[in-house]
Length: 174
Ligand SMILES: Cc1cc2nc3c(=O)[nH]c(=O)nc-3n(C[C@H](O)[C@H](O)[C@H](O)COP(=O)(O)OP(=O)(O)OC[C@H]3O[C@@H](n4cnc5c(N)ncnc54)[C@H](O)[C@@H]3O)c2cc1C
Image (cartoon, rainbow, N blue to C red; front, side, top):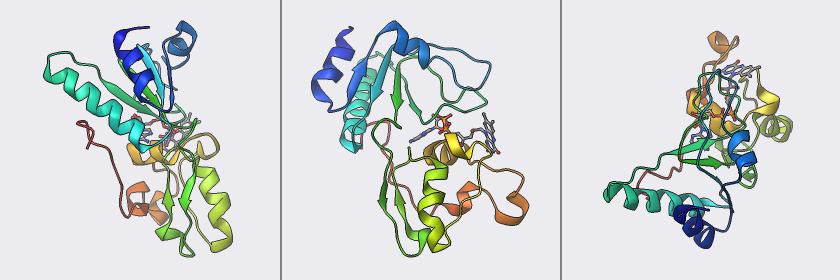
């Protein structure tokens, strides 16, 4: 295990993996591209994400660049969910509805929740989010990252029309 992976393992609550199997597994999405990450991180909470970003930011300031690729369910068709460096895999832990408002439009979600999962929970309150066609096996985070759209866009708009606000971790960990 590299020094960077070891440091992350010591400081994160979530798991850190560098095995060949894990790296190979996350080297592809649903595109034609293939890049093996050097480290796979399963963040357990927001703090894990912030710590990872802050650490790589500090390394970058000293000239060592380690990119981070966030990943939902890896159904991206354009290679957006593959990358060298750290693969940050959200579905393992950060996959819940933080709060479900009576008005689903005001619900708060962990972005690794599956799109279909959100629809199932919000349907009794007439909640509805129509995308993507991969709805059963893709995440809200992936849909936001891609601004997913589809055959219903003319009538219902695209993903950005369903996002009221985002709580995000920046590259420097803030
Ligand atoms: C059969 C099939 C049908 C599809 N149909 C459609 C369709 O109708 N419309 C459409 O738009 N797309 C479609 N797609 C593409 C893809 O499924 C969608 O873009 C989906 O929203 C991606 O979700 P994901 O969880 O798999 O994200 P991933 O593939 O894991 O990631 C997608 C992008 O979002 C970023 N990302 C993921 N999670 C986060 C996060 N928490 N924070 C920040 N960035 C994040 C990733 O870095 C990557 O750039 C389809 C794909 C397949 C295989």
